[in-house]
Amino acid sequence: MLQDRRDPIGLDALEARLRQDLEWLELPGKPWVPRREANGQTVVDVVILGAGMCGLAAAASLRLLGIDNLRVLDRAPAGQEGPWLTYARMETLRSPKTLAGPALGLPALTFRAWFEARFGQAAWESLGKIPRAQWMEYLVWYRQVMGITVENGVTASNLVPASDDLIAVQTDNAGSLLARHVVLATGRDGLGGAFVPAMAAGIDRRFWAHSRDAIDFAALAGKRVGVVGAGASAMDNAASALEAGAASLDLFVRRTTLPRVNKFTGIASAGVVHGFEALPDAWKWRFLHHVFGEQTPPPRDSTLRVSRHKQARLHLGSPVQALREQDDALVVTTPQGEHVLDFLVFGTGFQVDLSLRPELATVGPHIRFWRDRFTPDAGQEQPELAASPDLAPDFAFQEKQPGLCPALSRIHCFNYPSTLSHGKLTGDIPAVSAGARRLAEGIARRLFVADSALHFARLQAFDTPELQGDEWPATPAPATSDQNAA
Ligand SMILES: Cc1cc2nc3c(=O)[nH]c(=O)nc-3n(C[C@H](O)[C@H](O)[C@H](O)COP(=O)(O)OP(=O)(O)OC[C@H]3O[C@@H](n4cnc5c(N)ncnc54)[C@H](O)[C@@H]3O)c2cc1C
Image (cartoon, rainbow, N blue to C red):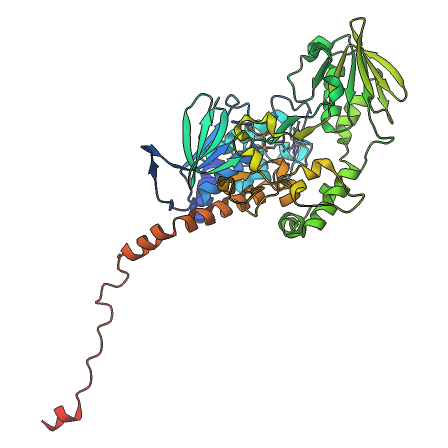
């Protein structure tokens, strides 16, 4: 019986197709990096810190290029990597369902292929956006079919230059690894942490949280809750509080209007993906300064998820100016007046602050940031941009003072703060494959050049004949005139 083309084919069939596609493309490439030992230890070619979307795409890209001596570490428990099942509080992804994301040009590796294999084409057509938890299920499948082993519950605690070309990756609970290259796929806050205004410092933690924290929303039932910020996370946290039964929800927004247009996403194209990195510095700055100035709107769905609750109030032109504890409550002061709350969530994003990243304690002071060498035009200043690392074309850090920490050139910053140097190749789903390929190709180039003497020795030693010598015997030389005379 002919199968209805709308029936789900099942993951086994999809995986068989993926294997076939890889075979047709002769992928993964054969391993080619010479194995090494140092101090009695096997040297790892690339240690990837973080097994979120970027870490997985990086590992898969490296494997496809035949670089398979990898270790992928993540401090989170298995299946809990990244924000998706922890502090992401939206119902669905913000991006369109059709994005190929980390599929690396392999059709059978897309979310769509995975979804249709499980639920069929009709289900795909009726799907709106991708449910958040389902995206995580897909990422777990992705790592399985791309043969990526993740070591969970392992926290990288410091990166220490160990010799001319090795880095000791110290971990809290799995000893120390010796790596030639290290990839920081440590996420949105990979070079810092949550940003909370200084005024919260003296306030008891039972009154506030950052949107990145684990928040007990059930405990907010019947409470007066405030949220600071107008981004996607602010909106998702407001919705979660309301759905948990908050008595009131006040959203405090500095601006007098909500941003409406998602600028950078709007101009997305292969040109932006591949061209941004090649822009002169002043143009890179100009693009992102404009994006920061306009800000990214929260998704319409998330905003409607909040506004449908009658106890939700939007306060525009209301930067939080002061906080104080009073009578077992929190008083929030804005230019529009005072609000008495039981709990406040800061949806105020993330910041670069190396003091929050133990793994960068040794090398961090040597990292060059944009502020160290670029002065924007008057009126174009932007502290968050200035705190972006100034990265090489392969995402590697560069030294503030040449010669003081050469190991930085083998530590690759494959997380959100790379945006000013590379464009949006790491912070979002859409162009992560392009980012992962750029990273992997850069590392492949570096490994080959570093081992050039060994590869030359392989060239010299290679003696597998193509010709056996019997294919075409040389034509005997014609007899000379002397021989004729004799
Ligand atoms: C709430 C939220 C919602 C988002 N929604 C969307 C969306 O809908 N569409 C979109 O395109 N983008 C979205 N993004 C942006 C982006 O796609 C995600 O941030 C995505 O998770 C980025 O992947 P990543 O691999 O860089 O980081 P992550 O997924 O955060 O992974 C980083 C990993 O590094 C690990 N780690 C960190 N430090 C260490 C260490 N020292 N040792 C070991 N492991 C470590 C962490 O445990 C974590 O698992 C969202 C971001 C957030 C925060």
